[in-house]
Length: 326
Figure 1: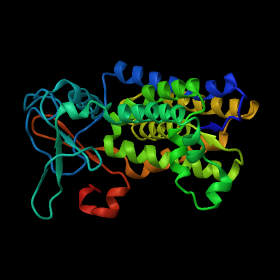
Figure 2: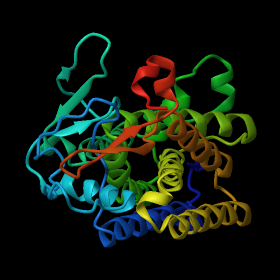
Figure 3: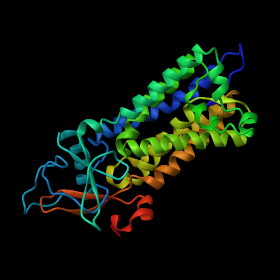
Figure 4: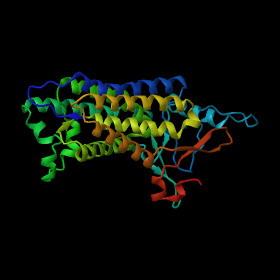
């Protein structure tokens, strides 16, 4: 998010750099996941687990063989999500699908591999940003004035600006950098969290970003970078939670910290950047990701040597404590 540009005053290059710094995180996380041969773990977040040999794409182990370590099974389960063409178990926020299980039993949702590509809602958001910017040009800036975060108008009750401002952009450069950043980190977050949680984090980050900007930044502002910082926060929470299972957590957290500090530093040194909006989005995305998960925890191993993981995100304690293994 950035301060809304005044007429005939170009946006400084530093304003684009502050957003582009966040895109590096997406590449670093993506390379790390590929290096460790892991992807988003989309197994069931509930206790009920089906023993189908195709669920996770993990080959059966001989009955008397030594079981793999928890970390190895976690990584193998991650890999199986990409290698199998069969249906995978999905958590509460993981997507649509049929529910199974009798009364009083946990429910498991199933989704085909094609629906788990991790790009659907990222692509939708990218398309919305482009279409909205086209509408900004077509309306000669009227749409921008209607939807930008302008504190005085929000005070008059125009609360929609807290949401719409993140879909508007100051110029083509601003749009391209934000779209490139979203395209870099969005798919990874959508994969490891699922489409519903991804949207929840994105929208919450928008509201948190705009609210923080409204409270501490008087200048009008537009841009999706606050929401992108929310995705950065969600990634940080995911990496921290699973640092003992995936490995390399400390390294990734350092990269995330570097991205955040770099952006905050640029925001302090250069004018025209809504640093409060970035900070609000970061906090909002991290907070919601902590609450809704995923928070995978090793549960047990089947007789075939397949690891079972459950999602112990705090949200499940509110809806059904039976879904959470103590």
